[in-house]
Amino acid sequence: MSKVIIESFAELEKLIGKELGESEFLTITQEQINQFAEATIDHQWIHTDPERAKKESPFKNTIAHGYLTISLLPYLWEQIVDVQNLKMQVNYGIEKLKFNQAVLVESKVKLKARVINAVNLRGITKATIGAKLEIEGNKKPAYDAEIVFLYHFNQ
Image: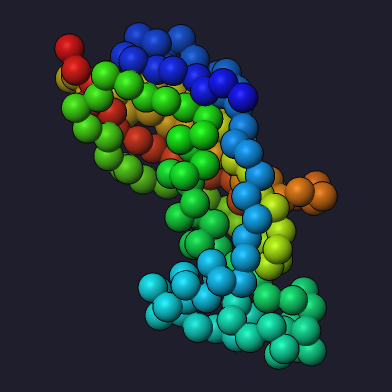
């Protein structure tokens, strides 16, 4: 799979409305979920207690934290796009985020991305990217969101 290479605002602007591609599948493990729980101090049993989840959860298994799936964005995004000629990149925001489907442990997820908009703000590029995290074997995605990056391209 070849990445989309973007080196300037003009190149990004030409991609408005276009699909950029998708990442490889990534398996969500219980170890990842437990490490995320430690890092965020969110030890809710639906994430970290497989035995209780089997008995009491409507999913009959542990599920990934929604924010764990969001935190995978940079890793998955870099599989799709290679933004070059940069002084700096800033994660600016997430708009219209909706969690649609729980991600069960051992599920495989992948990111699909498209360019919604690109605006030149006095030399800084504000890029709005449509992001959909798909779960293998599910019709509904884990989430849909608009991710906003600020790209400071070299002249």
